[in-house]
Amino acid sequence: MAKILNVHNLDKTYSSGSKKLTVLQDISLSIEESETFAIVGPSGSGKTTLLGLCAGLDRPNSGSIELCGTEIERLTEDERAVLRNKNVGFVFQDFQLLPTLTALENVAVPLELQGSKNASKISRELLEKVGLGDRFHHYPSQLSGGEQQRVAVARAFSNEPSILFADEPTGNLDAETGEKVIDLLFNLNKESGTTLVIVTHDLELAQKTQRILRLKGGRIIENPISAS
Image (cartoon, rainbow, N blue to C red):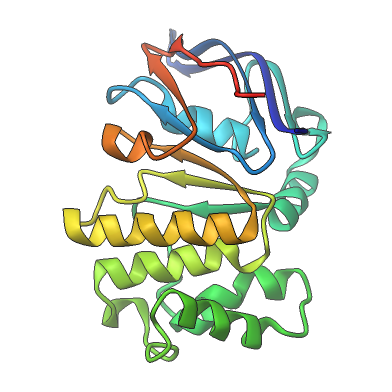
């Protein structure tokens, strides 16, 4: 299996006045195409920071990240945005839907950025898949938390990403709704063959993935080798 993500000796430090806070230290990992992978650890262990670096949303202080065959730390902001829009999907804890757009319009955004002529058709099909065929024209404020997250899941798959990053995707949902959203995420993921990387503090959710990387204090304390 080809590697879709390779991370080598990653460090991330933030400066606050004269103080330096090391959030990640000497992180190395690799993830294969179509693999499901969880990053777990206590609050403050660097999980979300690592996810952001892997997705090219932030830059490391040192180390290298190769995403979809491209060394992303060499790219400009614009080049990284193009790479993300072409290859990456996101699901966030707080949904991050655009409040002035309907469910249909939110799902269509990544497609329209790519210049797709079928944005509306694909978005309708995806919303139907996630059980929101009767919510096309509802705005986020008219949807429940679970419905908003299902819109976010549909949007994440709309550009047929090679890799999908989910940051605490059930963090703002009750247990029953969270379970439904996770089932949906894994089912769509299996259907599309996307690589799925989940940051979570929920060990039950993490155990649904093929591999679990554990962080503590910005360092890896467990990183099982891939099956291949």
